Image 1: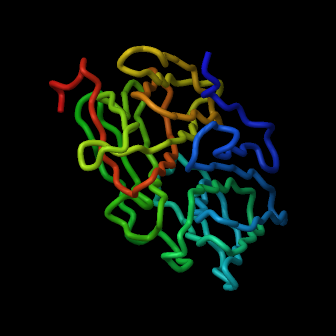
Image 2 (image 1 turned 90 degrees about the horizontal axis):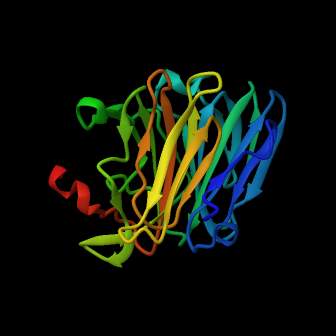
Length: 264
């Protein structure tokens, strides 16, 4: 069985740390901090660029030699308001001091020194509908291809209503053959808006040499090294996920699964 489902280490401090080495791939890193008011965390970016996403709560942030003030607004991710984020290039440091209890995601990928530190959102991030019927979901694009903030990172938030599917119709981005398809590794940080609630994520290849179906709970991360990767939210369980993607080029091109090709 592939080791794609990552449970949080606990409920306080750094509760996730996924590196290219631990994931067995080359580009994407993802960490998550859950800290209390008054606590401080920080890291050096090294050879990676970073997007800090204030998933919940507020913190004052110093990064790349500048004070950025207090970032964050929503206290519960399911408020669906646009996130406050900060881009930090490679070769810099960042430090965050919580002014409320907060959850901070650290999205990482190789940096090339091509961009300066900058705030991302909440201005310019608008909750957008994608899909229709029970495939309807809502997107907060943080740094996708149209936003030229980054060297490598592609980052977005997705809200899937209860009873709906997302990352569907099934698709893959696991070959470096632009413009037909691009190779992008991906992480999904899941939240579920129900006590004890759960969702489903499947990761599978066309030949089923990789074929995993996982129950995801609040706070879990799923790694997608290759293959198709749809998500389902059962009735009564609203789902959120934060996607981080990166690969050899910063373009998102995908190929649908054969069984859903007629849906595109």
